[in-house]
Image (tube, rainbow, N blue to C red):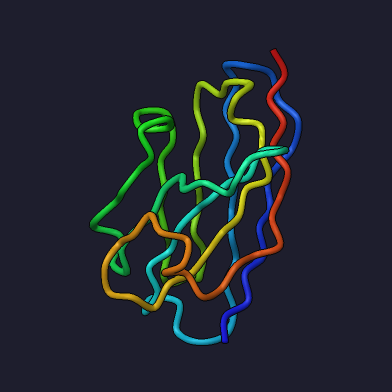
Length: 124
């Protein structure tokens, strides 16, 4: 069992930056692929970014590529999402997720554990 808790959300203006963090507890953090997903009002949950167990492989949605950076610290059991050049369309509840599958994936069904989500609002 893995417990995930997100932090760092809030209200920012377009063009600003924000860093989300996710703290994990439970089983060995480094054995999980980690991902970030988001869900905007009235829309389905969508993939944002994912990171391999070692942190050597990353995968981004086209909509955030070049603006967002995912990273992890296995010694501290944390994964972060640095979001630059934020746009109003980035407004959503952001979720941290953990997957025991070996490969980085954008599929939400690959992720067994989820945080409670945190709101990010970008004003224009």
